[in-house]
Length: 192
Image (cartoon, rainbow, N blue to C red; front, side, top):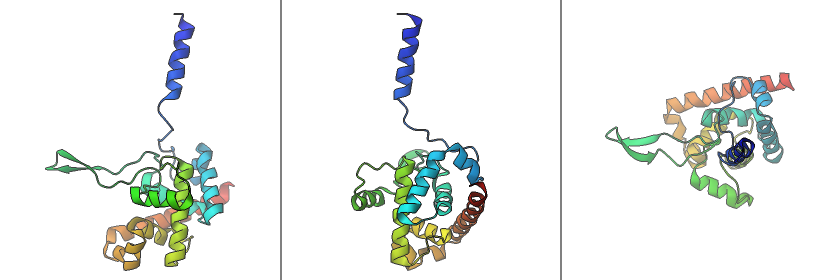
């Protein structure tokens, strides 16, 4: 077999495997740099904003907190006796860290049966769907990244019960999400 044919076969095999680029963008602290590096992310978030009314900067801050923009992110493993693997902490997966049951609800309600949590378009659409329902059911502004994050993390029933109030660490995280959303909002306004 000649060298060219061997290289062509290796190239073809390499291009078929591996799936998408799930690595985090280089600069997560700069919305303009993130948008320039991953224009598909911005297209997906703008589509979700048009469909559900959730601003891009709120989506960005939430995705940053949930997965750091890593498409195949998973929760850590649990261990018994510190060494025996017992499975993952939850079924959360992908950019949005959506749980299995909530993801299934989204697919059923939107008719998007082929949606994948490691696809940025589906993950941002899910996030828009979830936050839109949180706004409708709980009265949380779609622009309030901190409160939306609390409802996202605790679930709508947990948020309605006020489960987040007894978790100072979670309130701190929600504050960081709010701050990051404001930073992203200002950056996006200047880079358009």
